[in-house]
Image 1 (cartoon, rainbow, N blue to C red):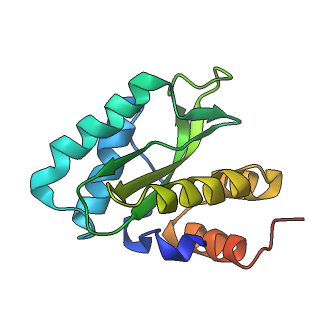
Image 2: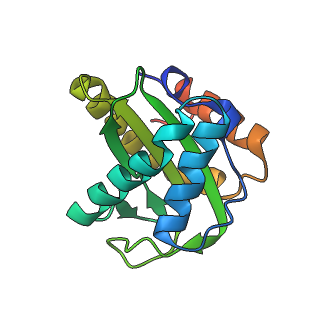
Image 3: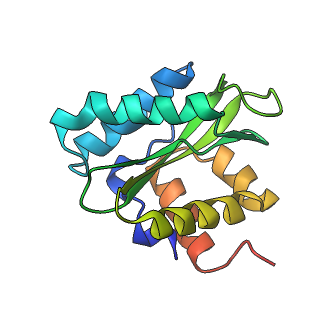
Length: 157
């Protein structure tokens, strides 16, 4: 699996404004709605589902990274990436503010694809160079280039 299989380039945001976990989730879901990837009428339900998932345990996995995700009644798996220049309090495992957020929304009937996408995201985020460059992204084009480089295995050993 590659980022190109599920990341919506039109929704990428290198200047996340939110400073709270809920605000960041709302801003990211809104970016997917605005890009035509999620139905506007499902906005609140999707936000609610992602927040419910966060109640099970923060997806702030440490090292300034969070991967909020949920399964929902959507036709295809879709994801987005946001970079927060100032960091977001995400109740991360290491207590650090989150700077890079990958969001994933998957169909209810595709649990295997959901896990494969999460695995791919986690694998790439373990690479220090990828994570560091992602935190330095200044615009949508920077994020697109980094995702493309990651898909081409530029960061994995």
